[in-house]
Image 1 (cartoon, rainbow, N blue to C red):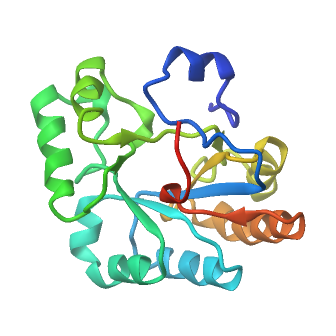
Image 2: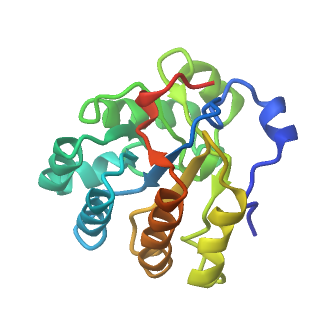
Amino acid sequence: MFLAKTPKLIQAFMPFYTWSVPTSEKILYLTFDDGPIPEVTPWVLETLRSYNAGATFFCVGDNVEKYPDIYRQIQRDGHAVGNHTYHHLNGWQTEHVTYLNNVRRCARIVKSRLFRPPYGRLMPRQREFLQRHFRIVMWDVLSGDYAPEITPEQCLQNVLDNARPGSIIVFHDSLKAERNLRYALPAILRHFAGKGYRFGRLEDGEMA
């Protein structure tokens, strides 16, 4: 179970996180978590390229070290990158020092001040430390591409129904999400490009 749209109440209760980019411009911020992997990430890059779309990839450090060529291609294509821990750790289930050391390990290879916690889960103590060093990026639209119980059509509709100017939208360049992602991503790019939207990297705008 997940919420495709992050409620305004939650966003207001946690103002120390970045949920969206305040703007009246027709711009969306596509983000991809958990890669890079050879089975999915190159296809994502090719699809983005066909629409001249920018994006932000929150990378797992272990995957970056396994597939450095794909990581370099993300950067060569002009996309932004962010830290997603080295081992995709759940902050609610990981001791404070272990978690922060894992983030630091990722930071040695993913040079970015952007951080997104896997599952969106951080303990207060972890968050208090990390926000001194990173901008912690959450989202206001969750595609649900990773959820086996939703159909590709539902994944697409989650984004079409909820994206607004400045939305930060979560996808996953992962095997778990591949079926839904391959259906939804081209349709989303086509739909919003047809309405005059552009797709930016998170560094493109002032985040709040």
